[in-house]
Image (tube, rainbow, N blue to C red; front, top):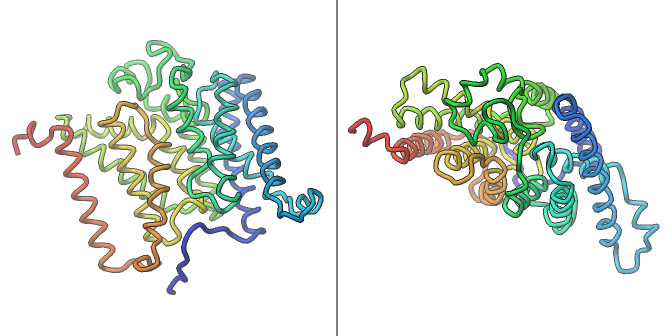
Length: 351
């Protein structure tokens, strides 16, 4: 069936939006539960602050956006659960990408930026073009980098797994530790198990499109495998290198809870595969060549900027055409070769 293509942004009808938002909150429960278990009152207090502040800011902005002759009472008659749950989700996702002991000052600034600049300045729910939590996280990451001190463990205290050479991390922690979350890192990004449980729920409920997650994960894995080979690792070591990068940092959390946002992701099925590929490539490129050890939120925000281009009505379609399959496959091969060359693979292997 041919999809009816419209320009972005997109917003679902109220009942669908409400169900989807509730599903996201439910999916976040395993991640939040793990954060409370690991970081206890530090996380709980910050979660309450971020959530209350986000709801209050959105309510204030909602009221100020009333029509010229509209009273505040008339304006707030339009205020629904869809104006309460989304800012809570934004606040929680934003907080889960931060260290558990991050300054309250940073949280306040980040939430203000996420809600007002990342969302309400565009008109509110369904009209923002960037992921609000991502915008907030990028802003505080660039502005308050010195505040990002993690509660470390053992030999790599005060660091994240990604900021330490992977071989050194694996001397202290196993892949099981990485999977379960027994390593330093952000509150919600370190337990792959909790994230995957939430992701499975969203996919089963069809509140998240598996195509974005799959395309992002597989493309990232491919590029890291190519990088591992280009760096001179053997087959087994390359697999370990790739698995380490999949389980470390914000890749899984970002793909499951941020990249699948239907408002800031493409409309069509092929478009979502392209979107996932862009994210996978950008995360791999930032980790391999950038000055930051992690780049998931940067990748998502940059990929959001490509969505209007991906959804452009003159070429977008909901059908997997032969032209799309060929172009997509060739793009992956070319990008993989660029990654291989970028890490010095051709020189190392004397190709």
